[in-house]
Structure formats: C-alpha cells, structure tokens
Image (tube, rainbow, N blue to C red):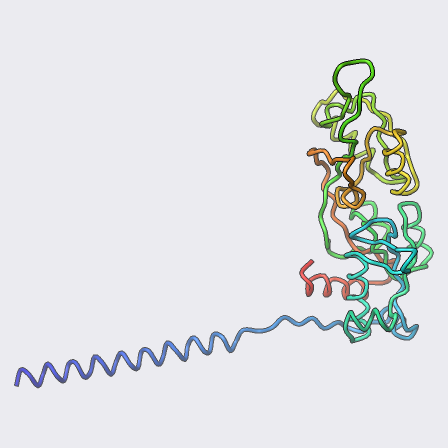
Length: 283
C-alpha cells in the first residue's frame, strides 16, 4: 500500500514537471513572437515630394576632408562618411538602395566650405548641408538640424621636430602649453579661435598665440608644411585626413563638436527623414 502511494506521488510530480516545462516554453516563444522590429519608413511630406518631383537630392558637402567629404579630381569621385550618408538619405527618399542611389545619380553634390555653408542654406541652393557642420545654438536658430551623426573635438597638428638654431635642443611643440607667441592656423569664419581662447581662459592658461585664417584646409596644411604657421587647429577628424610622417597631432583635446545635417527652414519633413536614416544606420 505504501509502495503504491509513493509511485502515485512520483507520477504526479513528473506530470507536473512536464506541464511546467511546457508552460515555460510557450512563454518564451510568446516573448520572442512579440518582439517588434523598428519602423524606418518615412512620411512623404511636401518638401520631400518636391525632391522626388525634381528627381534628385542636392547636398552641400566638403571636398577637401578625406574620410568625410572628399572629391578626387582625377577619378571625379566623391568619397567619405558624409557622402555615404547623402546616398543613404536619397535612397530613403526615392525608396531604393544606397548603391542604386549612387549609380542612378540621385544625389547632386555642391561644394560646401566654412565660408559658404550658411549661404547655401539661406539661398536654398541645396536641400541639405552635410559638411562637418557643428550643431550650435546660434546655427539652430537660423537653420534646421538633425540629430548628431558624429562627435569630435578640436585638436592641434604640428611638425614632429624642428631644429632650433639658437639652442642645442629643438623648438618642437609638444603640448598646448607651448603655444604662447606661436602662429596658429584656423579656417576662415570657423569658431575654432573663440573655442581655443575660451579654453585658455577657463583654465587660466597664460597663453597668447597669433591666429592666422585660411580659406581651405589644403592651404592650412601647406602653410604648416612650409613653416608659415606653427600649428593647424581644427577638428581632429579633419586633421587625421592630412596627417603624414612629418606631422603629429598633439594629445590635447577641447570643445566637443557634434556634427549634424542642416536644412533650410521649412524642411521639417526632410529633417525627420534624415533622423530616421541616422537612427537606422546607427550613426
């Protein structure tokens, strides 16, 4: 009798275990089934429809920043992260792939510089500017900006070593503290100079360099190589595109720069679409 009760208990225990296992399996399956994929579709608003009707997207890009926006005059090809982003946005607007957006020439590029980026937007010469354009409060009041797709800091590039004829050592610049009285090259109309001076002031650095403005990064690079300036100051992402064996980027970093895609006012639908692309491609 006792043996029968034990067998009956074991049978009930095993049956309960099977039922519990089945319940857990179904619960897990249901959990997986309810996982929703993110929706990356866009709304075709009036501003986007205008671009579709035209047949291509117009984007202002840099042509002298390797890795971001660069134009090779020999191959007549654009390359870089911001070029890729342009094709991804066009692909979203025209419901195709970035590869087809490129082969079907669904993007028309316009040269954007530090000098003319704002003008391109004010005059509606482009739909978007994707040109290492830092998001600032003042710029957000003038234009529409997307979420940031890249963050960087201002840095300094100098020659590695340079003989000092008046001593037994060198006068190589090894840190920001050695910039007093030196000539620093910056891009014309950029806010690099104001960021640097604020950085010195906040840390009570007794540093008073001279600032020299140049219209292009290529001119800044040449000025540094020729010895016309002692340091080239701009975002490190830009500096890396000009780095060679004779130059080095100092370890000092300051003033975070968040790049955004800019559009003229009235292009809210387009900026919403850009944000979808930035989110989808995990910029």
